[in-house]
Picture 1 (tube, one colour):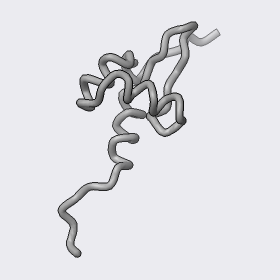
Picture 2 (tube, rainbow, N blue to C red):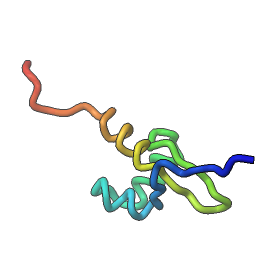
Picture 3 (cartoon, helix red, strand yellow):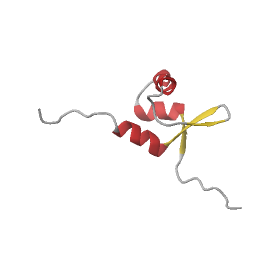
Amino acid sequence: MEEAVVHDSLMDENYVAQLTGLSLSSIRRYRTLGTGPVFIKLGSAVRYRKSDVAKWIEAFPTGGGAK
């Protein structure tokens, strides 16, 4: 049987809040509403892949474009 290899670091919700500059309650609200980054449940622990958080951030519109 092959051993599973983790290729992407996992972050807890506190780290995601710190990384994004959002409050912990905002991260939790986005998760509850289904509008936050993809998450993983490991028992009762919620974890986020760095790549999923990056994709979620990149999906937000940015300013400064031509009108």
